[in-house]
Structure formats: C-alpha cells, structure tokens
View 1 (cartoon, rainbow, N blue to C red):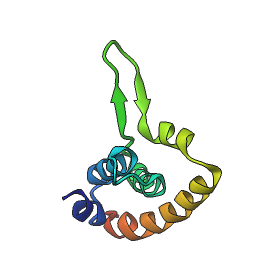
View 2 (view 1 turned 135 degrees about the vertical axis):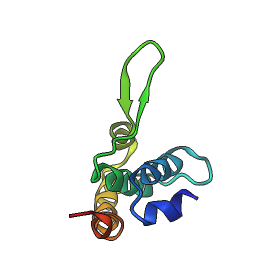
View 3 (view 1 turned 135 degrees about the horizontal axis):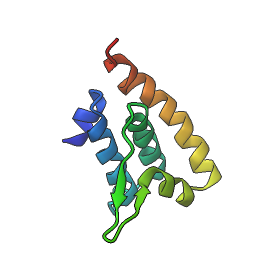
Length: 93
C-alpha cells in the first residue's frame, strides 16, 4: 500500500515506508529507510515522534545514529536515486 503511493511521489507514504524499513522485523533495512526518509524530507516532510509529556524526536536523525558509515554512504547514494525517480517527476512548478 505505502510503496505504490511512495513511488508515485506521495511524501507521507514515503515517510511511512521509511518507518517500516527502520522498525519492522523481517523487513528491516536501514539503507532503504534512509532513502525513503530522504525522499520525504526533499518534499518538506520530517517524520517524527512526539513523546507523552513533551519533546519531539525526528526519526530520520535517530536512524542515522544507528547506521554504520558504510550503510550511511549507501543510503545517500540510494537517496539521490529515489529523489530523482520518486520526487522530482511529481513536483509541481
């Protein structure tokens, strides 16, 4: 469900797909999560968690802390591809 919408430029779905790749066991892939969060961020969407009692954590920032330098480099490469493929074609002038 999210992947189809994400590949059609829907920023919220891109963020949800990033969450799925970051957290769901058996589906976890930090590189994919990074790429989808980057696509969502390129459209001004920053997935976050607001904690009970106050405070906000930006999920993209916490993901980067969990990634190895190799994963981060790979994620940046894939992010460039995803932004070009799943964001740029859907931007309105």
